Length: 393
Image 1: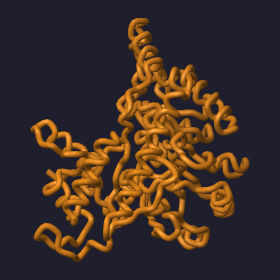
Image 2 (image 1 turned 90 degrees about the vertical axis):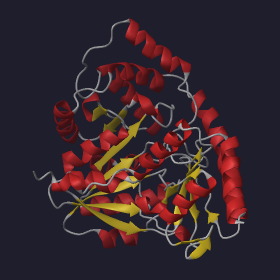
Image 3 (image 1 turned 135 degrees about the vertical axis):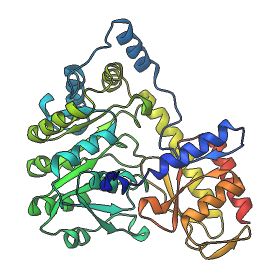
């Protein structure tokens, strides 16, 4: 019997595959150090966990409205007003099972078959697959390390065609950690408005910026706000990856479509997690500052170490918790008795010979690079870099 050709063409997430392999090796007693997962290694703050416990004890265990509780939607609106000076109403908000689910909803809501979505590379591994799931066509802009992995206004203009429906903007970025400045966002907003395209603004790493402040492109005027769909969540900022709460802010028309799709696909997000997310958004940000301090220390150490190893290099990221390591000077050379031709082969060798789990740049549209996550302990970072340096030496 013939199965779905569309869904058979969807590739599995390489980051989750690497993380699963790493965890399997750990379970089998192998001394492996993992740098693949995109989740903070800090515990969820206690006041958030207590809010979840109270919700359970109070019997808040039934269905909620499909697009999220009124309490959480109001808390999200308050967050946008306080943090971003953006005014939204609860009808503009859709709460989903993580920001990944939010993005799937977005593309289902705005795309028709053949619509093009511009995706700057390096990109988060799931963007192209999500677009294809919604019958859209990914169109890639190749950025360069020399330009801090950011696309230029001219590159954006050149990529736009009559079929262009949207641009994906991820700042701070996974996997590069780059952050677009306010002036750069103004140029992007101008082009988007002139060409009447949506901007899907993935701001999940908003709180994790180490120099400067976050600017949402939706802040830059009513015209661009009307065309922007903001995607955010509590996973990264509050170390709540497993709680699965993401959300979008958009026009009420788009929000209604997403809510309708979600009502048939998953119904509501977890009621307990929604109660916890209210506590996260309305509570103190002390835990975020603790994380940021640790991430800055780890980032600085990792960047300095990588740049001290012959034939390896990297830029210092401004946000998120990833480093893209340039391995182009290694490709084509023999390492450990094997010619390494691709980032996939390098990562396979690192896992086999060094017991270090890294993610190849190929999955991010960045061959010649390898992604490290510094959302792990300094001890693990030192151990992993020691192993890679000793192996390459």
